[in-house]
Length: 347
Length: 290
Image 1 (spheres, helix red, strand yellow):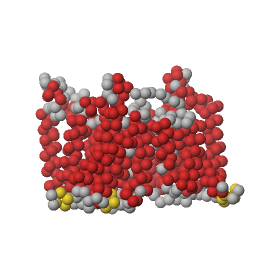
Image 2 (cartoon, each protein chain N blue to C red):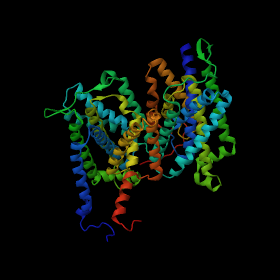
Image 3 (cartoon, rainbow over the protein chains, first blue to last red):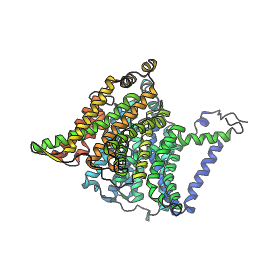
Image 4 (cartoon, each protein chain N blue to C red):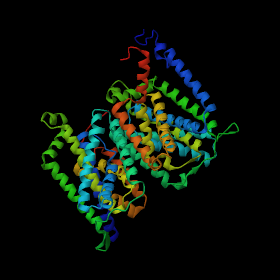
């Protein structure tokens, strides 16, 4: 009978995976994602790719919102910067995709810092509104600067090549996305074991106290914007190369809201929560449309109600999670684990 | 000069609509510190309700509008009771997301009931064009200014002289002190949301009369942010003056500098105001330095 998890060395306590069960779970998950594409149908592969991109974006947003406590409604804009940078570098300047992606990430990080400057004076609601303005300004720039971005026309990007292989199928691109998502998760998990990451968390919990104990709030806030935007830009750049055709409509305020919903439902300030939320918000609309398609013959009216149903359930899910489980799916997952861990005394 | 007059009057009518939406915004923020991202959808709902009562049910427009206002107030109270009240004391992001979820649900209801096709708004407001010193002005624009003015004055009087209005100002000033004086916070929050519902519905009716009933008019919910920031998030005169300034600014830039630019100028103003004077023209100044 165990009463908890205890360690006798600092190394064991600070390890990313601390217990044998955690290690087995991680190994199982890795085996699953490696084997999955060989058995999955194209439909599921497509969904898996969407989830991978969404996970990267959600982790990026979580660094800023969940860990550093700076609310951002500009996620869509930052993704747009990443996507258009990568797309234009490849389509106009002929850079290979593996060069265009890191450059796009750096550009997005820079733009993130610029729009992060208001955070030095503003917080909470006011910052949220400032990032909303950033979203509108970036969107407007894309649609009103046709010489650079093609304006409201879609931007077509040649499909990426790697070692002479054209990455134009879901199966081939899956591995790129897997690498990117895995790398993002690993980097972020480690980030919050360092001085920088802990400074972010200190700012979130109490910015005045953080300043008093010697955290340079100005610097770390901007660094949080840069780090977050870097990964959001990565998600955008990958979207561009995965879709090979992008338009501004993909990166509106709706996108910002969708990603905020992901991290709220998944769990603020958790990495597995970012993944859970990304998977949940990607699968939910897909499942709703599957159900409605299955019931099409029984109740034809469902087909016309589909967009409304997706929208309504989206809103209702956000509200239900906020009211019933504010800590999101990550907390539910922890509850399930705890239930089995201390079984049969599960209270 | 004619162009100037034309732009001034259309800008003024748009500014009045902004002021009405902003008023609901400010009332909610003042009493409960919540930013309502569903204000645009509440406005849309008001427009569609009037459309339903007057066109689909064939009621006379006076009764239709009255029923709309009652339903809108009721809807606001419902939203407060079931969505916002359980979240009292939660972090700001929860509040923001809750109202965003609410806006999504409202949009879905509108979509399910009325579909995505834009509708013709019942023309009970005359749209004759009259000449004022050489500028051709739609009568509906003038009526919009007049109606909005009446409502804004009525709300201002409400806050100044009625028992509920004074209770709301007391809560905004100091929640604990107000509580100890026997003011019911729940009641005041509900009234705040009811008022927000009514002012959004009035703005919706006026706007729909000018541009028609469609999902597009909900965008106003986002476009009103520059107004409330400029005027100050917690100031009712600020909402009115901010609304007028932003409305005029939009039409002047659209008319004199270039079409398209009018969409972004308010947001640039918003950023500038936030950097220079975050509490706006008339907002309460809260100083906290890090």
